[in-house]
Length: 127
DNA sequence: CTTCTAACA
DNA sequence: TGTTAGCA
View (tube, rainbow, N blue to C red):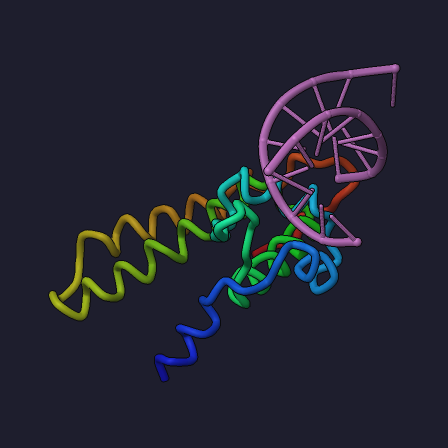
């Protein structure tokens, strides 16, 4: 179950293919990269190369944006997933505590949160 | 022909 | 975000 992850991480798609697969413009795809939402690789010719994981992430980003979540909000969501995954590993080595508390606090911060309402005409839905 | 960066009537 | 210019 690990060779699969490796393949999904292989950057083999040029931006043109990603555009068709995600319905995003090259401008948008590059902009999300500038915003650190994705980090595609570059080939010998400085051309961006995307992996299947990048495609999935771009699709998520597209959906979050459509729901009214702004770039900062999406970033926060991924940061949570990262720290959550980190806490999981650390908790397998040790009992519990520390990072878990931080994770719960940030989770609550997101929930109460103001992230995502920086747009007019969009009703906020409860998480 | 495709992608890249930078800039804005 | 769109679009365009000038390269590679």
